[in-house]
Image (cartoon, rainbow, N blue to C red):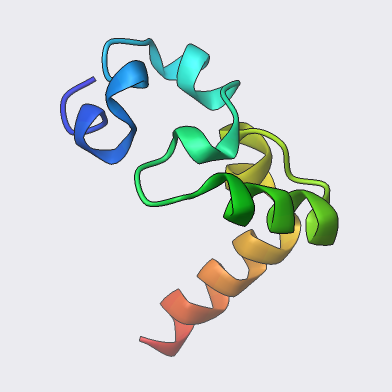
Length: 68
């Protein structure tokens, strides 16, 4: 889990990667409840896993990598 604990709120710092993946998006440091609601409304993203596997975010990430 090295490196993950500083990317999540302190309540999730000792959780496993699987537990964090299934946590609400606002478990990520810097993502507010309001941000999480916007993600849910726009893309039906409810969990960290949903965010990490969302096709639009993956497409944008791939395009950004190719653009480098």
